[in-house]
Length: 427
Image (cartoon, rainbow, N blue to C red):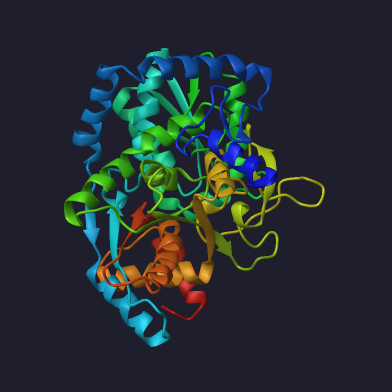
């Protein structure tokens, strides 16, 4: 063995398993950490301490599992999409691909209470808020699903709730704005910047810096300073844990591939994490490819970004030539974000997860495709995953199985999708 080979072998031998992160310092390899003002450090330490205290607390997890069962409606089904599978098989035949079409399954997070996976995290963090003795929560939201889930958790647990939302997203997601208000939350419109998710997050962080004594910030994705990426991943991993058991029950083995959309990345982290050490399961994250590969036309930091600090952690970020956060675009409000969770950045660099992007056009086509083949209207976020999953399925064999995380339902997107489809002469 050459000295170079020996060195590489030694380096690989000491690398932890992919699941064995973050470090005690909140690092996912080179990513993560805590890049925040000193005013937030005490609140982060308090959150880390209370989370560590409940990780082995059976009473806490029994309470959360009880809410999952009675309020959320877990476990969510694993659904065999037979007509979508047949469509992929026909497409494979017509295109001359070497594959002949995998069987496609949907992990139905769209059937969870409030219509998406977000409720898994907000209930968990809501219980942590109660443990810390804080009466108020704040949240940021893009598509509105995290806002609705936060408002729902607050109503159920007796907490005050304020939700920051960019005014452009308020326009695109009017239904969810109404739902939040009915649930008792105050929706605070943000008119700065691009008036989307990044700007809502900025304002929520500013609020938290001045209210940490009585307020907990429920970050909605696997982003932000440690311990948020770890906490959100852990609460969302119920998706992958259920999916794994359901695959063993219905398929008799693990799936060959799992596909999920990636904005900040909570739904993808939730379904990927329980599979992360199962090397034979291909994991694919799908970002928002927007209108083109040009900066400002997409929201795909893992595909086109570089390491940088955003909202308290180091991860892949879309930046301009001066190192400033770049403008982004997506037809999907939930993926319209210039950064991504640090663990996704780690998975990318470790080569464990493959990341790609679907364009607005591909997502809109997938939106109508699932509706027409299965009678299920998906969220525009989920539609990005569907577009890539159908393409991937055409390259796979008929005895292989692919799971799509159906992260949310499309009720919230019907008006916006109708507008975009009408512009294209398709409705």
